[in-house]
Image (cartoon, rainbow, N blue to C red; front, top):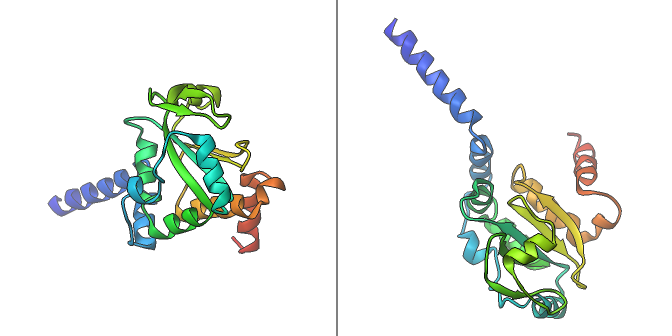
Length: 190
C-alpha cells in the first residue's frame, strides 16, 4: 500500500509539473540546445532612446526591421521568453543578423524619441501603439511603420526563429504569420 501511494504521489507530481504554464515548453527548449547567454545583454541592443536615429542606423547596417518587445515588471511571459527563447545563441544570432531589437516598459517613464523624432515616454509609446498585454513583439519596417505584431509568448524556439525568418524574408507581405506557420507545418508533413 505504501509503494502504491508513493507511486501515485510521483505520478501526480509529474502531471502537475507538466500542466504548469511553460514547464513542458521550457523543458523542450532546454533539450533542443543548451547553448545560452543572457537575453538582456545578448539579444537586445543598447538603446539610445532615439528610435528615429536607431532606425537610420539599422538602415545603414542593412537590417530588415526594428523589433520592439513591450514588457513590464513581473510579467511571467516576458520572463519565460527571456529565460527560454531569447537567451538561445542560435536565436540571438538570427535576430542580430536581420534586426535591431529593444525593450519598452509599458509602464515606464523613460523618455524616448519616437520614429518621427517626437519626445515621448515608454508608457506613452505603448499607449499610442495600443499595446496592453505583455510580452508583445512589434516589428517596424525601415520607415517606422508597424509590419508584424505578436502578442504573448511563442510556443518554442523553432516558432520564434520562424517568426524572424517570416519577417526577414518579406513573407509578411503575402500572409499573416499564423497562416505562414500552417504552410510551413504542411510542407514539413506535420
